[in-house]
Length: 130
Image (cartoon, rainbow, N blue to C red; front, side, top):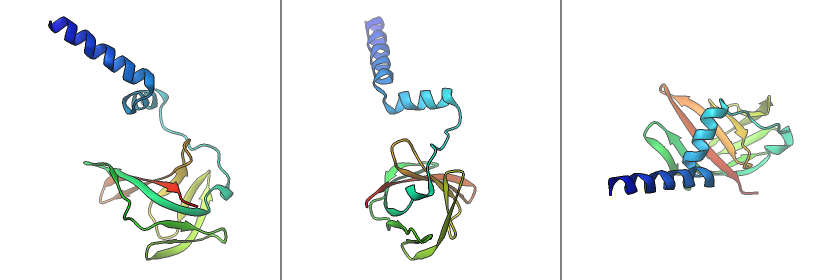
C-alpha cells in the first residue's frame, strides 16, 4: 500500500507542475534565475493601482484590499493614501519620491514593488483599476 501512496503523490505533484501551479512557477523561476522586468515604457505606469497582495517574512501573499490605492499621474506626480510626491522611471522600474522600493510591471501587467524595511524584504503586488 505504501508504494501506491507514493506513486499517487508523485503523479499528483507531476500534474501540478505541468499545470503551472505556484510550485511549478517557483521551480521554473529558480531555474531561470533572477526575474527580469519586461521592457515597458514610461507611459505604462500612469493610472490607478490597487493592492492585491503583500508578502514578506512570515507575511506571505496576504490580501491588502483595505490599503489605499496608488494614483500615478501623467504629470509625474503620485498620491498613495496620505503620501504624495513625484515619480521617475529608470530601466523600466518605477521610483516614487517618498517610497523606498522600486516597482516593475510583471508579465501579467501587475505593478510589483519590492522594498526593504528593518532588514526584511517585502513585495507588494498591485493591479490596475483604471
